[in-house]
Image 1 (cartoon, one colour):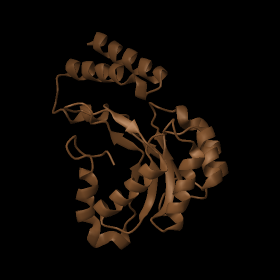
Image 2 (cartoon, rainbow, N blue to C red):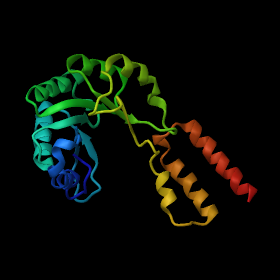
Image 3 (cartoon, rainbow, N blue to C red):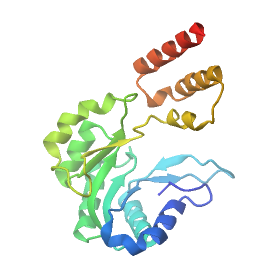
Image 4 (tube, rainbow, N blue to C red):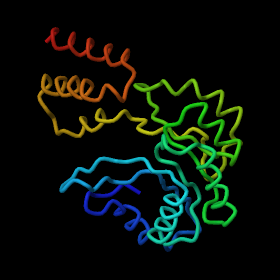
Length: 219
């Protein structure tokens, strides 16, 4: 619901709805609910607010169905955990949406073991999407839980664990700078790591920064 612009947070769904309509029966559509923009301030970027109340979920799914020009969503993720709503309440709402045929499968993003277990007990989960890359490996402890609880991978989710940001945010984009000076290139990588260290495990960050510093000294 929020992969758009400040003026139109639903822009991506609208674009996809037009583009994918002729191929609807040949593709899998996944989208998300559970985040809204706080537009109380006069200008963006607007902060995101988690909202997984049942009424909000139902409004979100109807909006996504309309924008995507479809009568069902193949996979519907809870984008972020709402600390004000218990996982059982979210899962119960998803169970009703699945019964109504508006959602075929559901998943959760950025969830821990307790939340996953409690939600799955009410309405079985198909996929977990968490931040995961060689720079962000703290969710690996969930692998045994996913293997225990979730069904075998299927067409709608070829993997039960769907890695988010699997190329490590703000690192790959540096490689699209056309031929930067070598020292500037290394400096930009270090700066990117420091600014985005909350996305990554600190240990590999330190290793990369030290390695880059040594490379600069060698020159």
